[in-house]
Image (cartoon, rainbow, N blue to C red; front, side):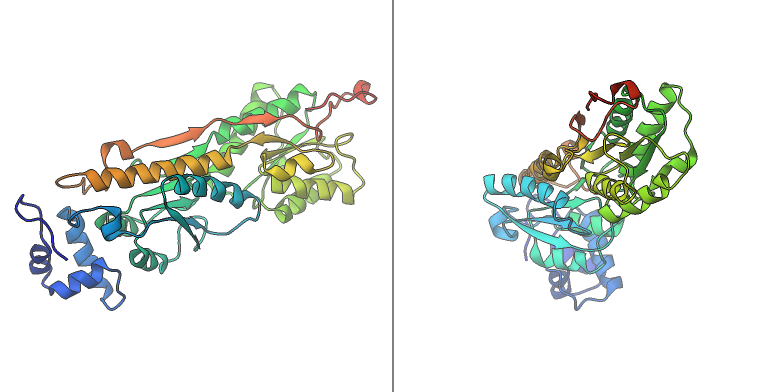
Length: 364
């Protein structure tokens, strides 16, 4: 594989000489071959990144597959489909296909994932929740493959393009809605404690309670897993208390389904005896009985925006001349984060806590 040397840009021969390896070894690294020792691979990739190596041409048809790689740590049959639909729509508009990968944990893909990416050579990557380790970023940078994170699990680094929703505002709006209905004993079941979106939503809950002058029992804040089972188990604990809450803010619609199931087990009527607000506004929420009041998170639009941003970054790299910014691996416009606002979809799983409203409920 050659490079343009007339304008002073680095060549593979330069990199091979400096790394003390053959040109064939450099080629193996660039093509994601596994028969290169990890220390040698790391040394070559570091040099490629430091020297701003770019392939000649840079067009998609010459060096990349016509793919966007979408990476999840797990596939939820409802939540994930909304994001997938958004990414697919934008990929189709640009003549690209989507390859779906399930790998690793909610914080990072498995170590062998990066080897597969090097072989597949996608135009760009969209990761849901996951962050990328510095060494993964360097390898993607050396191949001019940009990435975008959807709803980062942790606090993303400043140079990591990301798309998310206003989780704190969503938690605030959901809790305020319950407070406006007269509830004072409000519990919250959020997601995993090590995810930024979970903490942001419960922080919004705390802010709403504090603003209203309502006491927060620490035991009324529970961390689940965003799944039905997590919501059910945490709700069983809360509803088994003598001073059980009259309302629960569930950090996801799937957890809200679990709360409704736990309430049915105990013969607690929703919304007459327990009000529930979910989060996400998945299509299923409209078909439940009673219909679920929930915070709308534009999952499909988040997928669309992530795909558009990823493709835009790829196009910028394709048309970029000279050296890339080796310190960040991104052009100036790449350093951005998009955040979508949330809103409460008022339906039927909430009712005023006032007994005077029992014959004509005030609904969310």
